[in-house]
Image (cartoon, rainbow, N blue to C red; front, side, top):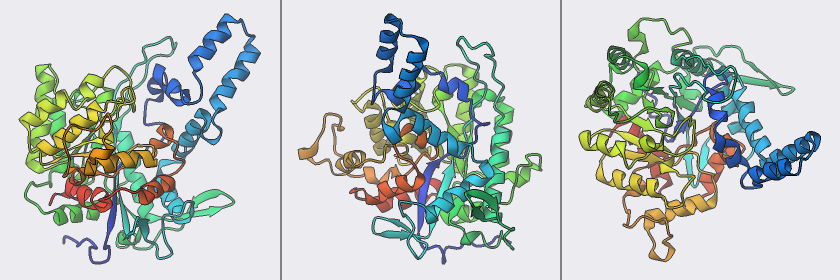
Amino acid sequence: MQPEIIIDIVMRTFYDIHVHALNLSHPNLTAYLFREDLISSLIEENINWKTRFVIAAASMIPKSVLKKQVNKMLNSGGEHSPKSIVGNCLSFFEIPLEYQFLVLEYFLRLGEPKIINNKNKIMVGDTCYDKVLLCPLVIDFGYKNIENSIFYNLSPKRPITNQVGDLLYAIRTYYRFNLEIENKKMRLSKEIPDSQERKHEKLFEIYPFMGLDTRNYYKEEIIALLNKFFCNFSKTESGAERRARLFEKMGKLDSNMYRDAGEYADIFAGIKVYPQLGFDPYPKDAEELDKVKMVYDFCVNHRIPITTHCSDAGFKVGEFDPITSPEGKWKKVLADYPELTLNFAHFGAESKSEKREWRNAVIALTQQYPNVYTDISCNDANTGYYDEIENLFHHDPKKVQKYSPPIPNPELYKKMLFGSDFSINLLASKVDSYNEYLKAFSDAEVSHKEDLCEKNPERFLFGE
């Protein structure tokens, strides 16, 4: 019998459409960390590290002195030094994945800044929310050998099966246990009695997105994957029906990935693709193009949402900006599949340009296509960013800036989604915690918050 979702009890839901649940075994960190621009981007606000090294070399500074200089550079900036930023992010990554959702909830309830009131409601602006719906995005890291002077430069394939199994086990653990802390040491509580029947008592609903890079599969394998995970999705079903099915399956599977295919239906809410790792949305190769078109056909026919990474940073291992840009390949995709439900993550962020060309292209696509959205994940959670968003909503001629789009955007607030990019955002911003990120959004003087964090993501995920 199909159970009913607890809509009468859960009055309001806050959506975080873009999070990650990873441990250090999942990403290929070596390929990522050896990008030339990574460390410099972390340090550039405080010091031009390349210049310092050139000066050091030219002056023949002894190695002991140079080491002190390097340490000083890494620690410059105090609590937001490059060293503390990387350390804070890695400290969360090192938490066993099965604990991460419990830890996140623990600090939301008890940590600073306060984001939950004494009635256990999430406070965002003037609105109280009963639930936080998280969408952990699985990334298909695939094979990424390292092209540099490292001696051991061969990397194994990062099996996405292991990542999915770990995530499913973490979700199941979250609903079966609570977290107990004693002397700063954490442990799981005794198992919650009737935990499946009491899922609605938990703070989080967790609906992950399946990572997919078509290059890593034969066409027949992709067809099998789509049918395995999304066989029950229908273009005509209501949003309430889809959410009820996902809620029913949530927390039932563990890390055992060798079950009957039918058991895996409804564990994913959508698909995640990552062009900066080499996924090409519209490849020239006929065989690869056939595979991606088959995915788009399936997603349109079953109304499966896709989130694509859309910034010139992230887990970037090569020169993949041309296939990541919303101005190139994705324009071709949407011209062929105008009904595709697609989220351009990070609002087309460009670290190398202040012209906002990617962002303006994303805005144009959200206006042109009914099911195209963009999330604002991994911004620096500062007032300047939200001021810019507010100006885009109202397009006040008195506040027009050099990177503002050339046309008004009165409907943009209907196509924008809240996302945090937690826990990756700990590496890319000066925000120390999920609490702080949510508090910044709560306090921001930006209109249409309920559209961004509730109405729009609900429509993106589940349909009307």
